[in-house]
Length: 282
Picture 1: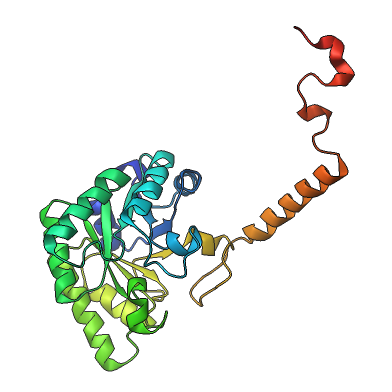
Picture 2 (picture 1 turned 60 degrees about the vertical axis):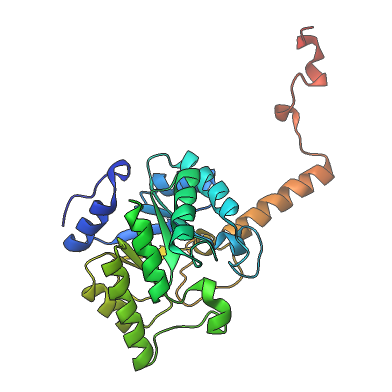
């Protein structure tokens, strides 16, 4: 095991070294300044600005409506809270699908405007491989994403586990090797059987990050709102570490009750209370 690098010095080489040493990599999504600060203080290795913000922050039914401007806005906020963290930013739907030139231009916009260190895109088809090659050619690190790719929700007919058949296993395995060959420095694997997650992780030299991909990937990622108990849907792969929504609702309810009862604000919350008006200086 290698000694873990400080968050301020982590880079794509650090993650490769962690895989080689068998050291697990921790990733979390974050969407604002406060959660960026919390992730760094908790020692999380890297932060993903996921287009999942469309569902957990903006209230959309899926990720397809998220814009480049949305991604830049939230990534820049996280960067202000985590100035030294390694940040990966999602390329939203249709920002890299039309041409290599489009992929390059939008990757640069996201990286520069959002203050990120790398971009992530979904899929392993021939056109996605070409997009990865084009972006890497611009010296921009790319994280690939295979398996259950949320931007393909309509094509997949919902958020369903992928790679269950032998044929699908072979397709996703081939895509993993292809995105690695194209220059991706990391690979997110989502919603696949544990066997496939293990086999891909053993077959590629780049680190793999699982979300619903079993125990044998090189690291794990969760959506921060899922982890904190702030979402209603709880997929099988989610572990909830806190029921934060319940605590927020309790606190707001107590606040509301004290306002109604006239007990807030109390004297200690008031500037120059009338009971001590003699202390007021004009």
